[in-house]
Image (cartoon, rainbow, N blue to C red; front, side):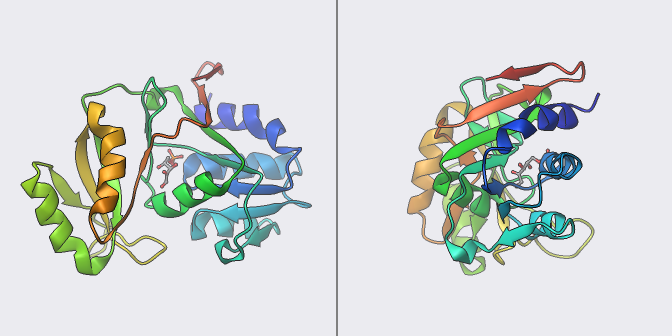
Length: 219
Ligand code: 5RP
């Protein structure tokens, strides 16, 4: 069984009671949208999405997408993650949507994250995405290198140049030690031109994990 499908099917009922739903980005969210469609839960609801990709997935099913410019706060936000530690720190931004994901997470009342069990990983270091404005890229890279961090500008698949987020900015991937993640999330904001990181330390969210046998656990 596909764990993305298992976990999406598991949480879909939770969305029934909400009218304004915030949606993340990626393959898991796409699967969830397919299930929402199957369960006839797209019409009659409003969606605020963390990427143009997700907006298109909703609108091609004739769902109503509210712009982030509306400032409408979702009653619930649902998304996946790239890694989660056993103490619920998440690393997100594999799809370069970290800024809008963190916005929607922050401004939503209830927050749920879903993913396959294999994303639960306690390791020494993680590759953490940062969204940075173009003009500050060289300053940020040299500053972080001086502090001893390994950094890469994220390349776009098959195209020349860096990947560009929906906000028009490049993404850096920085190696950060596990024990430093939450401190890094705060301190990185003090470097002018860094907009956001993909580290989520809030822990004010539920995390559902699924495996191939169809088992779902709550972290
Ligand atoms: C996008 C994200 C995604 O939640 C993360 O990359 C997981 O994606 P997928 O569902 O494709 O495994 O943070 O920026």
